[in-house]
Length: 416
Image (tube, rainbow, N blue to C red; front, side, top):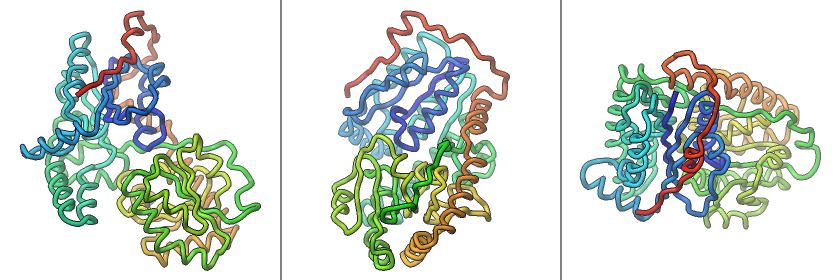
């Protein structure tokens, strides 16, 4: 099949949850299909996606300067449409996709997230798949509930408008995909909900989790995540302000290692707190996970599946997380982690784990088994491919590329 894959961000490098999912899906589809990928680049400092260029048949990247995107979003809102539609309605992307449609015919189009849904519907493909991952309108609703006016009013408006658009897109696509049961239940229309399917994120289990965890040095609590993402910043700040003093009172030598990319000034300032260390933009989080005693996910606004938590589970780390995070993991009654929503419960959960190595090993071992059984990539990727192909049998084609294709692959289109 010839597949057009539309993404709202370059799915490379795989350093964020959405990029991890998109890159794994693209890599899997490209093994047996001809994948053309068009995506936006919102950070001009990011390097070119060399690995992605070797995977897909054709790659087109459109720069998305923030100022112009915000202006389009505002204009869109004034016309009664969503901020999301305006933000990503870059004419250069439309031009790129139209040029490709003039060159070839696509058998299927995959829209990654609601941001590319409108453009995908303009493609005359036999199969249209919308990978929503999360129901974004629900996220905007949570933002509205936790924000002050006037931001709350803007977020509430986007939640209402986007909820209507999401239902119309689910109706228009052949199939829509979400990452967990909670997101499926967030689709308000029951008949349309039956058109959606769950394809989870996956996680790779490290072959050796190491024996050094807890063997020497101070007890270490770890937080891993994008340190510029609002829910992460707010959750981590809440934890340090309301939970950390109680933890160090009971465990005076404990350290909190904050590991992630692009820390805001607010996060950087937290490094001055007793026992808190910030490790920014590290090339690999594995060494930090290997030596940590406990992982935390104090996120109160969380949609879908948190990849940072999946990684901790795969490393057999006991995790203390909010119910907002836990609900995305579809564990049912058996939860191999500790759920805590208030400061007292978080303090108790973390300090119990720090004080009891046997409890850490028991919960960590159950967490790794859960990740292995429920979040292996293989079944999820195969399920997604079946949705793209419409259940038809697929064969592995020879991946021969013409000189002309090689020349055009990796083209970057920019400008306002």
